[in-house]
Every structure is written in C-alpha cells, then in structure tokens.
Length: 207
Image (cartoon, one colour):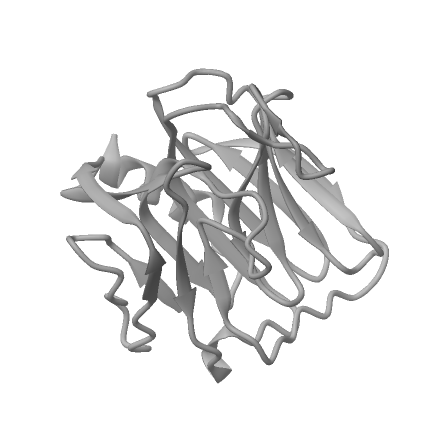
C-alpha cells in the first residue's frame, strides 16, 4: 500500500515506507484532511517520484483513491501545445495511469488488459472544488467512484496483469508531459480491490 497524506511532505504514511521524492516546484495548502499538496501546472511544474517496490506490483487487483481540486484548467493537448483546457497527469506507472481531461471534464484511468482499457469518472468541471475519485480494478470487474458513490462499472473479458517493476510519478508524467495544475490530498494505492463500503469510508474521512 502507498498512502501520501501531504502534511508538508510526500512521506508514505503506510507501513510500506515508500516516501516520495519531490522534483520541481510544489507547495502546500489546506486540504480536506490537514494539508494538501499543490502542483503549479505549466508555469511551475512539479512531480512526486515514488520508488519501485514489491508492494506496488499488482497481479490481479488495484485500488487508487485520492482527493483532487483543479486550480486551473489550462494545460497542454496531445500535441504538446498549450490550450485553455488541457490534459493533466494525476499519476503514471509502467502499467497504469490516470489523466485528467479538463475540456471533457473527466478523469480517465488506463490499464493494459483488455488492451487499452479505460475507466472514467466524469462531471469534473468546477475549478476550486474538492472531489473524491476512486478506481477499483479486479479480475472480474472494474468500478469507478465519485464522492463515495459508484460512477461506472465494466465487466472484464480477460485476466488483468498489472505487474510492474517501476515506481509511480504523481503530478506529471515520467517524460514530463501534462503537468497538473491542481491539488491532491489523501492519495492511496492498494494492491487489493476495496469494497464499495471501504471507498465510501475513505470519502467520509474528508467530507
């Protein structure tokens, strides 16, 4: 498990001890629980690099949950051009990633099985408003949640293989594309599928 509370740092609050390394510029502000980390987007990009570890190898199940606040929709498009409503990277690993598309108002979680599979959370159109997002992927299904309630569900047609030998990049992709102009709080990654009740309890912690 990985649990980043962002209380003035990117230290891991779980037993895994996977403290993040901050690269570039970040700041801190009041979040939903204590402090939150703030990424400056195109004008002041920042990134957290989480080291590779066996606990972040997901053979069949994964849960990702976090609080997000979009501070500015401006970003880059798929060609790298600056646009008023752009793409922002929440996090990236070797087999999974999560991108925010401010023009469409959705967050999209990608993973490789089935090929190029996507799971979304929509309705993310308000700047300056905290929302809780969660993705739960297992061998039989994948479910997305918005503010503690189920948003979408997909039934899988093939086993999932999310094993990875690399760590994670948060707030910007590893190749420095799509810097996030927003804030994150209570960022969690589990190597198991949380139940709907557990997701709702995570939402309740900050509501």
